[in-house]
Amino acid sequence: MTAAADAGRPPSALHDERTAALLGMALGFAFTICFLTGLLSHWVQQPPDWFNWPSRPAGLYRVTQGLHVATGIASGPLVLAKLWSVYHHFYKWPPARDIWHGLERITLLPLVGGSLFLIFSGVANIARWYPWDFFFTTTHYWTAWITIGALVIHGALKAGTARAALRSSTPPEDGPRPPDAEDGLVSRRAFLGGVAATSGVLTIVTAGQTVPLLSPLAVLSPRRPDVGPQGLPVNKTARSARVRELAISPDYRLVVDGRVERPLSLSLAELRDMDHRAATLPIACVEGWSASARWSGVAVRDLLAMAGAAPDSDVRVESLQAGGLYRASTLSAAHADDPDTLLALELRGEELHIDHGYPVRLIGPNRPGVMQTKWVSGLVVG
Amino acid sequence: MKRVAVAIGVVVMAAGGLGFLREIDRTRPTSSLVFLVGAALVHDLVWAPAVLVVGALLRRRLRPRWRAPVAFAAAASAAISLVTFPTVRGYGRAADNPSLLPGNYGRSLVLVIALVWLAAFAWGATRAALGPTAEEKA
Image 1 (tube, rainbow over the protein chains, first blue to last red):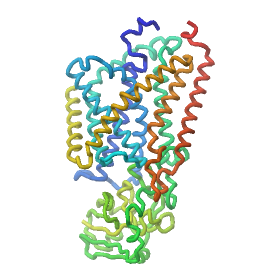
Image 2: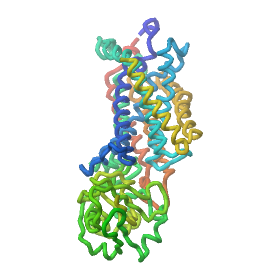
Image 3: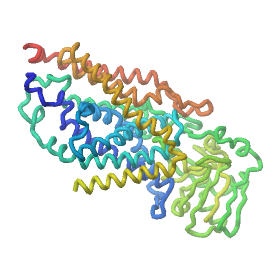
Image 4: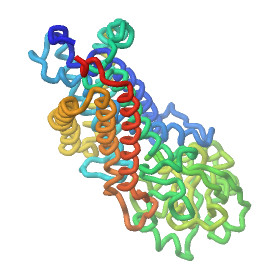
């Protein structure tokens, strides 16, 4: 290609509007998945009045949150490629042609900064690395709103350009192909294929932390679903929760009170003597890993019936933990009534390891791991 | 249509900004804004120029058939390292929790990158077998 033909064109096919539009659409799709699954997780943990999270299907949260983290990881190469494809605009002068162009460029800071921030803070969080002073969850959540808002603006302002770029039949894909599409460093097809392959590799080496089929390949995932006490990962240990003494104390009692006819105070021996129920349920962490195991213990609804709890009540599950954001969780009426919502005493036929919540932990279908309260000290009805 | 969509985006952004400010004791802008703006600056002023330089070098040094495979392998290696480095460095390890970051991630990263380069070499060799490009003949 001659220099004359080059003039007025982007540096190469990697930087033209078609490449940018294709990557932009892929990213728009990925970020929408991340935003919706993230929003869902937020609502499950801090439900608004109108939101009712069902207890079935049991593995739904494991899927939505696994998708959230996997999509976020896969977005890393996409964001870098997208920014690369439009990087030459960074040096454009004057900075804005008109008010719309100015608006578009101003919203690039929250869009670009927000996107990079969400991916960086997310991958740091799943590796339990916090090189900052802010609280991850809250900041990640509100930054997501800012970023998705900026993305909507960007999409609206760029839709025309993108549509034209995707419709045009300029080379190399649709027009007569030159014998070698090698005038740049890399052809568009090779570039996009390379980006997809990079995202694919990242997915394959991490998604096994929640997808059993891929677990042998999960060589770069922060968790392995079979590594931990009793072959199951742990997020918070008894030591870091400072519950060890209380948990192994012979004075341990499980208290059921609140809106009940007959408050209960049960020893561990009494709990062991009650009718038990077993269920295979996943621990599904907000950090995107999950692992299924066989749990057995006392069904929460049996305890509630025994105590004569007011029907259709929410139940607060409290831990021996003195403090911390996750020292208690709430069972909505639907979750409290599910026969598989258990106060588990055993994991895989053995007494619970103390890091899994000995003497008693909550385990129920379709709940985030942080809401499967460990070292349970009581149920408060109503 | 465009104006409506822009208005929706502005409302969503404003909701996010308001929420961010309402929980300022948790979002701590003195730290979070450093990361948010810093991420954009590091990308625009460090990462992207570095990619430009490497790209220019590859273009000058490599025969056309090998450019795409080597550029892919280099970019993929960098992106994979960047996304996984918090895991690979293992900053989050805790003595009392062996289930956190249990892998030998340094070795895994080397292995994954080696496979990427292997695939790239196979791709390059296939292309090189096609013979010189028009640019080389000219």
